[in-house]
Amino acid sequence: MPPVREVVRVNGSTRSATARPSRVSHGAPRRLPDSAAHVAPSGSDGTPLWLRKAGGYAWRLIAITIAIAMVVFAVLQVQVVLIAVFLALVVTSVLDPMVSAMSKIMPRALATALSMILAAAFFLGMLTYVIYSVTMQAPKLASQFNNGINQIMDFLENGPLPFTITNDDITGWISDGQKWLLQHSGDIAGTVFANAGGVFEVFTILALGIFTTVFFLAVGPQMWVWFLNQLPARSRLKVHGAAGAGWYTFAGYARGTVIIAVIDGILAYILLSIVGVPLAAPLSVLVLIGAFIPLVGAPAAMIVAAVVALAANGPVAALIVTIGIAGIGQVEGHLLQPLIMGRQVSLHPVVVALGVTAGTFLGGLIGAVVAIPVIAVTWAVYSKLHTKEPPLTDRLPTVKETVAKSDEDSD
Image (cartoon, rainbow, N blue to C red; front, side):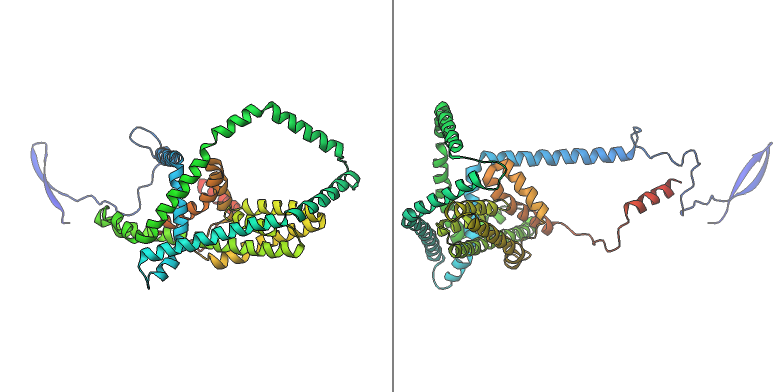
């Protein structure tokens, strides 16, 4: 920039002077005096910026918490409907491959009807087999239970334990229990009548679940396209992609859980049959059902099977059953789940434990069953919509290094 000539009047005379433009440095900022070097920046009202940022994050966190609480409250109010829809989605994910294969040679509606009939026949056949096995083994089972209970009582009374339990003690406990039942019979009856509506809810869930499953299997794609058409055009593909990732994860979890549960039931039946434990078929079905409840289902089934083995065959058989079912659990966790589910559902065991615990407190047994697929689907949808940043590749500094660096910066 050329210099600018200015006219300056000094004591009545006129002189010309050259004014040079000031140079503005666009490089490093001007160094503050030492007295102001450590003053934290603040807003217009004097509030430190770190406090303003923390307040912003705080009210956003409060808003998210309130929204989640409202969703959970709304879910609990229509729990019957959501359980029916959840069961319908599970059955749909399991039967959809069969319906898709059969629909290539017949109408999809007919394929849906045949698939549901075959699934119902399998379930009723398994239930019939369990009832038949219990009925046929009842006389032999009573004799084995009497012998097993006598062995247990002899062990408790004359065994190496530091305490003894005699028949008189057990008789006294039974008498105390009968007295307690007589004293609280009115409360128990009131509780039973108050929960009588639960039977109606079960039938409602089954009827609504079957009804919804039929439509999901028969016209599910058309229903989904209709839903997408109700959204803005700019959001349809994004919603479809996120929902597809969630359905992929949910279907993988449902199918994998069913397959693993069937394998667990078969392995438990083989183990109990080899040991000679009565009611091997019902106990294997119990193990199959327990596989649908993460963390707590399999141990509960193991305890029941071990108690039956202890009462019928003695402590050695109970120990063998306990070790065998624990081994089945290890095979499930380290072989079946990674092999069958693969990367469709990859949740850390800590997340599974926390999710099951939170689901149990919020929704009881149903909450424990639903918690893991809900978390898995939520994470899949979030991963689909979230733009991932480059991962950390360098070694993170240790706590000692971080403290030393902070001390250097402060000096």
